[in-house]
Image (cartoon, rainbow, N blue to C red):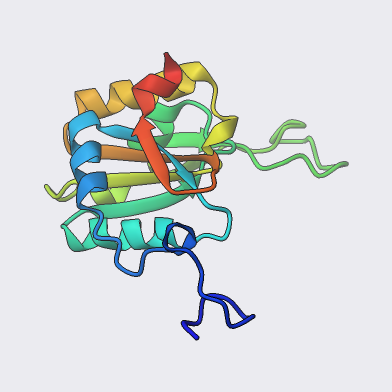
Length: 168
């Protein structure tokens, strides 16, 4: 038994997850286009292998969710303000009903300090609008060190395409 099927039957080759995923083609396409839309099998595993391969190739990676990003350029590159969520009745004496603005560092702050290539890996990218996807592509064109991978949802097999094609 090869460990693929519990029944003792061997599985067809095309249904197995590849044991060695080198990521060379993925990295080449990422460096060529700057931003990729990634569709991964729901059981997972392959995206983690790709991320490890990119880190081994010298990329400094930041993984975050695409939900609630807001202004992408300010969130990624600039110090910006956020407000805490409203939790009902609060003291409105000095901070108004919406709460105090808290200053936070840019998401890519630590990655911007070095000259190594940066990778921003966004989970749940299907919630991004076409304008937000287009601005991600534009950011990668302005800053040659920045590469973006946006997970766009599930698929039967691992596949990717340039994010600019998803926008168009």
